[in-house]
Amino acid sequence: MPETALVWFRRDLRLTDNPALQQAIARCEHVLPIYIWAPDEEAPWQPGGASRWWLHHSVTALSAQIEALGSRLIVARGDSLAVLQRLIQKTGARHCCWNRLYEPAIVKRDTAIKQALRSAGIHCTSFNAALMLEPWQVKTGADAPYRVFSPYWRRCQPQLDDIGSPVPAPAALPPITDEIDSLPIDDLNLLPRIRWDQGLAQTWQPGESGAARRLERFLTGAIEHYGEGREYPGQPGTSALSPYLHWGEISPRQILKAIQERGLAKQSDSEHFIRELGWRDFSYQMLYHFPHTPLEPLNPKFASFPWRQDADGTLLRCWQQGQTGIPIVDAGMRELWSTGWMHNRVRMIVASFLTKNLRLPWQQGARWFWDTLTDADLASNTQGWQWSAGSGADAAPYFRIFNPVRQGERFDPEGIYVRRWCPELASLPDKLIHQPWQASPTQLQQAQLVLENDYPVPVVDLSTSRAEALAAYEQIKQNN
Ligand SMILES: Cc1cc2nc3c(=O)[nH]c(=O)nc-3n(C[C@H](O)[C@H](O)[C@H](O)COP(=O)(O)OP(=O)(O)OC[C@H]3O[C@@H](n4cnc5c(N)ncnc54)[C@H](O)[C@@H]3O)c2cc1C
Image (tube, rainbow, N blue to C red; front, side, top):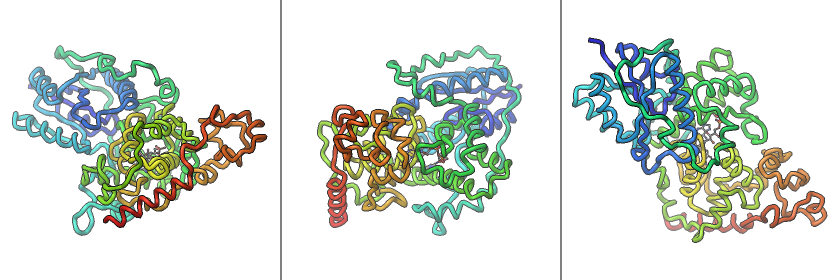
């Protein structure tokens, strides 16, 4: 009797280098590819608005790829275990394969599902498809997780040689002969009702072929100067692969292989880029071993930090809407809203501004990013925010507070980035573009800019707010 395997797609929305799919094809004559929309199982981190947009298009692309190979993606909604059990009953499947995820709520759910299916006699197998090295593969000499990146990364080096080669996509998939209901993807209601997503659609092509195109563009361009180019938000100096990696439309293994095949692996810019993929693994390692950190500071002394009271949310809203009066911050927040992505340097600047100058809790920033980033990723987002706030692993010391004007002058010296996202400032000369409030009335007139009318004055004074942040930090230092 021919055997059937379910392949449960989650955040591994690709056919190439997909070990769960590969295993199912190798083991069974019949293969049932499934996607289940069950956001409540990820609470309190259900996918946000930009993530849902991406997911809609990514599942659509995967479904088309699977059809082109002769099969069909079964789309369902609701309790994952119940859906899997229903499909097992319907098809007589005895195998269920998936690729692992590492978020606390999902680990808990997957463990329960594995137990339930195994006790019903189903062979469940799971694989690593998302990381170079999984969180339990890299430990200190004392068998503990790392909290500092550099020794973590040194420890990874010898193991990276053994991560294997990506497996090619199957040439064909067995057709599904059973009558099995599938929901139209539109019925998952992932797209916004009020269409704010034009900028996302102009920027991205979700799905495996979009990922391959981005990688190609990066490997034939920006990688050559990545070490320096990655710092300048006005130019395309980074890969912009983060949403594709998050949704599993490409694997780190595929990226490493492509770098090796082009003979780029030993160049220092490529090594720098691979090290950034190492930061991604490190973030997962932190999340897995310290699962409370999406909501609580890793460094407990920050639990009593005297955040500013912003009772009516005015300051938070200014920041979210790119209306703080600090051009580099506003440019970043507008890039985020418009494209669902923000350059890493600017993420650090806007996060520092929120947590130090506005002195608002990092969790509020992390939530906003969660809703608006197409690459919103619990591990990297948590790590990025805790690092910026000074409360995380290997964090920037709290007292090292970015001056957003200096940051802008250094990393956007000609104001290319600010002019792109804050066009009302475009006619200011370069030396004023990062601090329009310093312009004389004549300079403002020449730039056709009326402050407070066309563009806000700063919502906080940079030096006063810096001093207040340092005083707040002294307070928690003394309390602990
Ligand atoms: C406050 C804050 C929040 C962040 N939130 C997220 C998030 O939700 N999702 C996310 O993917 N990244 C996040 N990052 C990390 C980083 O900003 C993005 O990964 C990067 O900007 C993505 O652009 P890229 O693909 O062009 O990166 P590249 O420079 O091309 O790097 C290649 C890949 O390495 C990984 N990477 C690079 N830098 C980091 C880093 N610092 N930490 C972890 N992984 C990294 C990403 O997967 C990235 O795609 C955050 C950083 C900060 C400071």
